[in-house]
Image 1: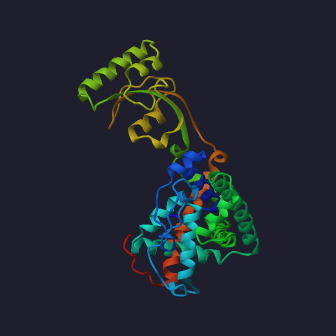
Image 2 (image 1 turned 60 degrees about the vertical axis):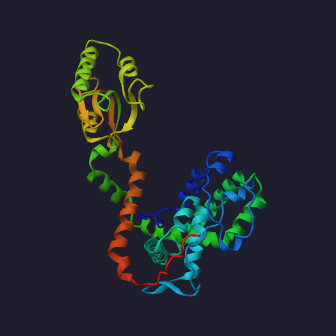
Image 3 (image 1 turned 180 degrees about the horizontal axis):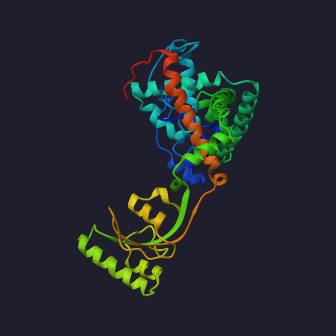
Amino acid sequence: MKRSIAILTTAVLAVTLLSACGKNDEQAQSSQPTQAQPAENNNQASDPNDPLAKFPPVKLPFAVDPNAAFVEYQGGTLTGKEFETFLRTISFLNPQQTGMIEAADKEALKNYAREYTATKILASRADESVNKESKALAETTFEKIKGQYISILGKDAAKFDKLMQNHGLTKEVVLNQMILINNSINVLKKHINDASVKKLYDEMDKSAFTVASVRHILISTEQRKPEDALKLAKELVDRLKKGEDFAKLAKEYTDDPGSKESGGLYADADVSQWVPEFKDAALTLPIGQISEPVKTDYGYHVMKVESRKQKSFDEVKDQLRQQALEQSYEKFINSELDKLITKYNIPEPKPAS
């Protein structure tokens, strides 16, 4: 559940919808999971050819008085109606969340409620300028999401209106939820400036910002004895040092399917993604030099670093801003939120139908 709500801007939710639905209508319709219809629609037979059937409204796993206090905190409450509206909106904006919501146990519901309460508290600290910015982003993002849905629904705007009706939502309701989320994020962003992000950059291990083009041949120990793999790797080192073509030998000998067709090359890759032994070699091996066999859990690698550079602050500052935002959110969660919440009134989830 980490940063599943407050750190997901509505702009990100729009991208999530697009990735969930695929790049074209046919992929979109075939990729959506089948979910149970809510109780009020259970008696209606759905047409499998109707694209609306690909986006059924979430079936909430609990029943609660709309006016009941789901969560009580200093200065306010989260009502049952607010919480239901939030979950329906999240399901509408991000269909991938629907199954998770429907399967939520009591602890998962508490996590959703806890994070939404955090969103409400942070949003309440927004000033007029922050709220104006959040509203503009919400309106722009809503139109993007609407356009994506209409494209998936056969370019039929009326079906989009029907979809929102099925979910028990209106544009105003969705916009209000988006503005709330955006306000909570923008309140945190106010404390993140270039100086704080640059400080984060200066303090981090620079290998996190290093990219390299590395050519390698993997001799796997999965299908052969380690001593046999090492012997073959050493033979390849000798052949390469005598001038044989690295790409040609990689295509012939490597056991790495991810780089076989490229002649063993991983171009401009983040070294931080690699296993420690391979990463260390990629960081320290002189450019253009053939390595001795490098042992990892996969086997033995013969490596050559073709290029290596460290990303500048300007290249990674947007990524670091997001990281700083997450840290700021975690600080609020750990140092403030649980002191502000005074009581949870989470109902027992209904058994799955």
